[in-house]
Image (cartoon, rainbow, N blue to C red):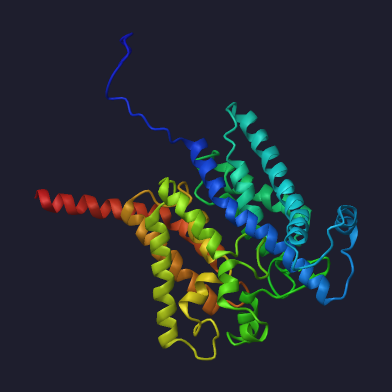
Length: 367
């Protein structure tokens, strides 16, 4: 009923947090991953060029570096960052432009205003990609993620799948040769196996053969996705998200506990010939994109459960599924992407189960 009067005092709720502010905080939390990813991509590319005895990169990358005169010395911070930027920026631009176009099309069709969350989706998508992914695949995957993962369900806040992971899964299933396997990490036609693929192919002892240490993987100074390999960078981002209460600590803690529990179980009763079954939990933490998925992808408030108990269950489920996929499926050894998407699908059911259990408990207490 409209009375023509306005409430001037309480019960107004004053809160500075809104969707735009929350997205800006997440983007700020991603900056350590972006910076480490740019440096590591350039560093790994320069190492491959040095090992191959090549004096310059082919194509326009080499032409730009020649004009700048920065060279390809892996020991040079400037050379690594500059080379990494030349790889990162085109991929991010392709993802951002394609996401923005689709967002504009659907927003105009609905007659609403643009939310701007496509910037965050494009950044998450970019950081999860291998550096040598063709730009047309970036456009195709981002388009699929925005349209099928978000817009067809009504747009921001109405999707039940993480849009960035939806686009990534599309590329993994449609173009597996460019996304997984020994040639997934490649720059300028030179490839290097990621530590995760090394374990899948040669066992945990193969990490020692290639000189990869746990600390290198923790820092993210190994071949991998553009910006999803540094556990340290993810921890720094998690600190900001937790301090601002933008991300759920229950989901993060649940996913970590689920991973540790499942890893310990496989350590005790798994197949001794299976390298992932015998891999210690602290290695699972730093291999692939586990930390990135735990901090930035599983905690997406739209596709995750809304109840506190549901968030614990959701996190535990995803953490355990990551280990299960790594142990049983060598084709996609990371497992983080598919585990989170499976958790997204089950999130409404988890919330329903938690609320139904609460209603039953209250009914028994009142009887």
